[in-house]
Amino acid sequence: MTLTNLGSTAITVSAVKANAPFAVSGFSGSATLNAGQSLPLAVTFAPAAQTSYSGRLTITSTAPSSPNTVTLSGSGVTQTSGLPNCGKVNDTNIYVPPNYDTFTPPGKGQSYTDPVFGCTITRITDAIAMGWQQGKHWYSTVTPFNANDTYLMLTPSGSPTIVDSHGNTVVSQANFPAMNYTFAVWDTMNPNVFYYTSGNRFIKGTIAGTPPNATVTPTVLAMFSQYSSVTIPDDEELSDDGLHIWLSSAAGGGGTGNLFLVTLNAGNGAATSSAQSTTLTNITYHKIQIAPGNRVSVENNGRTMYNPDGTVFQSWTNGDHVDWGLDDSGVMVAASLWFARTNNNGCPSNWGLGLLDLTPNTVRLCLTSSETIVSAWHVSARDINTKHWIIWSADDGGTCPSSSYYCFNNPTNTSGWRLYDGEIVLFTSSGTIVRLAHHRSRTNENYWAQTRAAVSRDGRYVLFESNYNQSGTSAGSQYTDTYIIGQL
Image 1 (tube, one colour):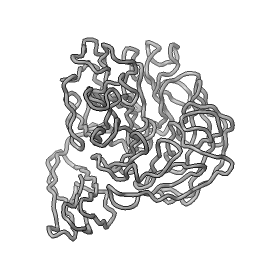
Image 2: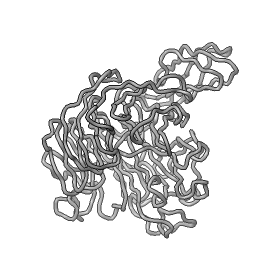
Image 3: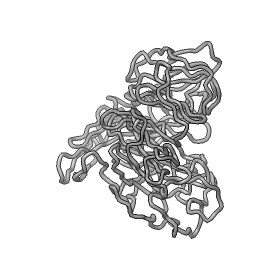
Image 4: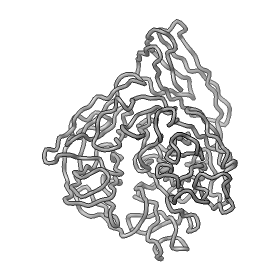
């Protein structure tokens, strides 16, 4: 929810409280709101029984109407242990999304319930109204959610911006610091801290002030004088321990240069410096990804994973889009199209999505069969320390115009709709499949219309992009907006 000062003078908020089983976050103890300013708050609900609850959010301030109250209500439902509270579990029926051509998405900050899978979907951006062509995050292997899921890092055209969970501006593009590349990465514990590079400096950014005019206070953690520029490369993320990141002396989007491991001197956003250790020299890459244990995956022609000391952990000549996670027992796993067209693929067709166990380097589970593999799909395993869920986006990557139901068409021929087409799907490390939502995006229209769904670090939310067949906007085929599934 968002608290807004609709008066003509500033007010000071001194307390925000919710009674159990409701809880509120996003308030640090005191906040001054000038006329028209807003404070985003996150209210969560943790029922202990299968019954209805009512509660109250109380806001104490210097406003004449203080204290202000908001009535809260919710119903507890029985949740299958270890699974989301919505979606279809291990269901293999084919579902065409109802009203596929005519469905109209809700307004910014509003929600609807997926009519097939029952999950709540909230619209975060209105790209056209916000002056963009595309409301979007960066990629599935870089979580856009901050440490407590109250803020989102988005990357529309130009500089990044930070918004709250209803799309309200926190840090505007104008107030975002200059960076060497397109995206920044969140701290794993402190919701107000993220990291980026500028020139040859590695910098901590701390959000300061009040939305929508919050600013960023920079703290230089290291300067690498041997390089003219350093980047957080595609599609790198801060390590799950919150203390390590691999930087590059080459361009963020790929190239040849040195990769080096950087260690922060403190966690929880409290770092004041960082130190360089292992360096991998003259590395050519398309993308770089963090892996459990502070390892780094280097993708070019094939893929090589290095240990923190620079020794090779494992190499692969195959595998498609991938993210590296842990199973419930702490073993490193990864979902992808492994060992395609060989008996090692793990699926009967030798062309399926499987869960690779990196210890023996074998596929332990077949997750999807060959007929469900589309030409473009993405994986997110950022929920690495909690539920260990893996998110799979079933997109497509062809060209338009065409007769494909992944293009702007009216009417669309859905007679060939297949299992998992146009869906966002959750895998557990034990092989359970939960179908969460139809994303309804015509992903062949442009790359950023591919959903590239990303899970939050606590597994509670999934963010994705979609154009919802809205072909008539001023952005044309380039249009897309951002949505969230959850709370799961």
